[in-house]
Each structure stands twice: as structure tokens, then as C-alpha cells.
Length: 475
Image (tube, rainbow, N blue to C red; front, side, top):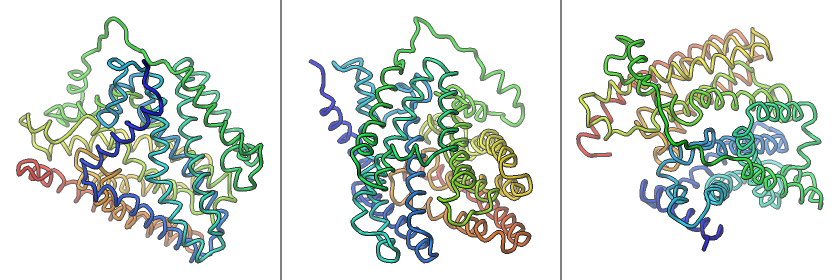
């Protein structure tokens, strides 16, 4: 007797809630959507006071939500061994295909559907509530809020299903996956308006039978394609791996006396997606920003300075690189060995710089082709110090378990506020850049350097802080 999909969805949702409730405490976890709503409301109020056009803000929100769906859809699916190593203990039921009368495909489909519903309640519903200031202070009708919740949830589902379908095609043919991805991007650039009509976003322009059917069919069809093509069983009778640790450790020499840097780098290389997932995550951020800044000017009422904007958001996105460097680590692991946590964080910093900075600079160089070399120089100057700030704050606040930032409300609030302190002034400078280019460029670089120095200060305190917590049992 096979387990029903409805039953799997229910127990997966219960498992997810219990896990995060026990990790962070019921009240702290329950406050997370409240905090998201407050941040969204503050952002909406800021744009309302700035007389930004409501329709443009709504369009931008849908684009960002779709991009978030793309990222969520690729978590754990970048490689075919995703069912084993990337999703870890947060999806324990996903590994039960070997012990329960249920197929791996049904489990993975149930997991993706659960994720869409979970994010819709935990993120998208609070985001919709956060749009209330636009109702009070702008021209957004209150009756549109329920529809906006449905359309943003739909665009999120389209993003998740698109990633799933693309990965399914990738498991059969990398060339076909690349061709389809590039073709889709080109079609959106050439005539996005006509294509978006047949997505959930199209419901905002009018609820017609064709748009309703298309918005429902699109994520379902993409999900069916991904499920049909995805290859789950990648195992062979035997597996061998070259001992790359010794060779890498020897090449690093005195920079890595204890092998901690080599371990951190190999953790990323040997995990699903390898080093390509660093490039993919930064590339996704760059692509969304490039579309916003260059190809869809109607979405952005005042185009910010491209170099500064792209560098700031790419630096914030470097958090994912730190997350991957720590995906197999925790404090207890290192307490078994004669190494200090400050030495561990030093290795993480070096690995972070070796992975995040080259990828970011590569996309900034690509940006110079799209937007011009002159406008990207400011971005190139501020990118590295901003990345150091993101690393330092993340290491100090979250230690070696940065995934707690997602659902632990006090930790997430601290991280968000710390990022806003640095990023908001730079975004304002990017918007006002044309008023005083030289002064704002110099001021932005100086501000980023100060942020980088602050990040180094947080980094130096992170090792001592978490080592003290570990030794006292206060974690």
C-alpha cells in the first residue's frame, strides 16, 4: 500500500514546524512572520513617502519573489545526490523511500509542494500584509491584497517549478538545459510583457479564463517535466575518490598549517553542484538586477547607479557562499580535535574570499560590458569590503550554523538590521548618484571601507565568542 501525497504533505509540514519550533522555541519561531511583515511594512511606507508608483513596486515584488522561487527550487537539486547530502536533517522524511512503500519521485514532489505552501505562509503572506501602508498612504486598493497574495504565491511556484524542470533536463543533457535557459532569458528580454500575461502575474491585469488556466497550468506542467526527467538513482556498484586533501593542503602551504582551509574548500567542491553553485547563486542575483536596471526600466521608477547597486546586492548574496562553507560543520565537530575556533573562522574567511570574491568580480566585469566601465568602477571598489562585512556579521551572529538565520527570529532580526545599516545608505547613494557623482562615489567607497573594517572586527570576535559559548555549554 503506497502512502498518499496528501498524507506526505501533512506529515512533512508537521515535521518542519516541530523541527523549527524545537530548535528556536515556539514563540521565537512564531514571531518570524511578524518580523517579516514589519520589515515589509517599513519598506512599503518608505516607498510611499517617496511617491513611488504603486504598480511599479508591485511588479518589482513579483520579480523578486520569482527569483526567490528559482533559488528555493535549486536548493538540494543542483546535483543528483541531493537526496543524500544537501537537504540534511531538515527533511528527514525525504530519505524514507528506502524504508517506506513510497517512491522517491513522490517524496520529492511532496517536498517541493510542501515548500511552496510553507514559504507562502511564512514569507509571502506576511509580505502581503506588509503592503498595507500602500493602501493607507498610496493608491493600492485593499481589495487587491488577496489577489496579490495569490499572484505572488503563483510566481514563487513558477520559480520553484522552473528550477526543478531545468534541473531535470540537466540530468539528461547539459547542453539542452543551457540552451533552454538562455532561450527563456532572451525571450523575456525581447518581449517579456507578452510572456508574463500567461503567468500568475498576468492575473493582475484581468482575471480571464485563459489567464487563470495558464497561471495554473504553467507551474504544474513545469513540475511534471522535472519529475519525468529527473534521475534519482545515481549510485553505481562502487565509488572511488582521489585523495585531493593532501595535494590541496600541500599547495596551500603555510597558509593552511592545520588543513582547515583545505577541508572547507573540499566541502564545497565535493557537495552537490560543486563550485558551480557559487557561480550560479551570484549569477542569478546579477541576472535579476541586470533585467531590473537595463531591460525593464518600467519596473524601476528611478534607475539607481548600476555599479553601486549591483555590488551591494552581490555582496549581500555572498551570504550563501558562507552558508555552503559551513553546511557540514558545527561547533561540536571541531571540539573533538586540537584546533581552536578562531583558527576555524580564519580558514572560513580565506575560503570565503577565495570563492565569493572571484565570482563577484567576474559578474562586475560582465556588468562593465552591459553598463559601461566607468559606472562599474564604484561597484568594483566597494564589493570586497562589503563582502568582508557580510562575512564578519554572519560569523559573529550565526557562527558555524548560519541556516539558523532563516527561522530564528532574534538572530534573523539582528542580521537584517546589521545589513540594513550598511546597505540602505548605499542604495540611497545609488539612487541620488547623478546629483553629485564624485562626492557620492568617494563617500560610498569610504563608507564601504569602514563597513569592511567593522566586519573584520566582528570576525575577530566571532571565534572567541563561539568558543566561549561551546566551552560553557551556552549555545
